[in-house]
Image (cartoon, rainbow, N blue to C red):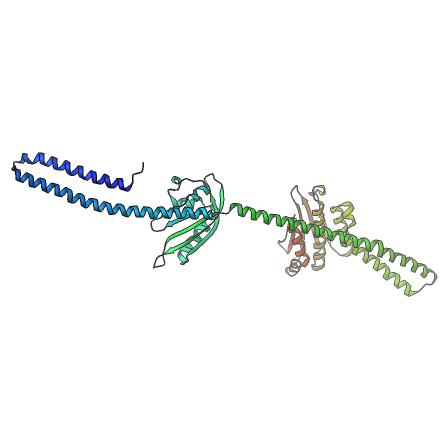
Length: 418
């Protein structure tokens, strides 16, 4: 049960009066036994002095305790008003308000802090250590160091965002900021701050970012597929229209040559054959019919065969750990384009004679490793290739990565994970 300051004052006064009366009674009882001052006058004089002592000291104690009690009541009223203001401010802003006295190491907080984290006031007896110990271990050093740096710097404002442990063991994300009060020597003496629970806000922001990324990747994938469809359309136009027209022209020119042999016709037929071959090569570059009908592995084998015919290079293709049925067709197409682009870049920009391509996959990802030999100058050319940047951006849409890993003896490996 709480006892008010007025009750304390009455208790002191009553105790004092009881003590004086008992002391006087004992003295009057023991005084005649000494044989001194037994006449009535002396007794009356002593009684008068005793009463005067009681009245004067009692009045003095009453006045002193009255003013002390009045001052305590005023401080109590001021404290209660401060508490009510903090509570009202906390209710208005939905923040946990705290006030820390650095000199006394005492801290005040409103009920909002208790409701946010689920603690009781009894559990917050050791205020300073309670705050530090409940900061997430990964955030604690950063938060405390930043706080100390701000206090030592002479600044008057501090803010930070960190994870804080609740009573149930879960963590909430809080945005904490404070105003630092300083004395004339610019030393910090008091901090007044507010903690805001931003867990839901950060979760919504993360969901928004994730959704935006999904929409971006979805749009990017559609653009990639539309490009592939456009490639296929151009290939069909070249193969079915242009090449057929050129084949018909060749047929007429052969008939004309059989009737009228001429060197000009012979040269023209040679150029015509060369144009048909180049158009066919461009068509295959635009879109691989082998990939469309037989899949990634066969399309890469065809690609390697074409490069072996055009350049003096040995290409080893390992697919023992690759299951094409376990790979999404869009991912397979992306890997094919990467192999196509990197083979072209390596063969055209380096003097490497041996290239090894390892293709593997699992239920969650597809892995591509392309090993080759090159010097530093040529490897920089490959890294700075605009196609490399384009492929990297496409890989991001499929949550994939690509990097060039150096090894000994000028050997390098292009590693792709999708």
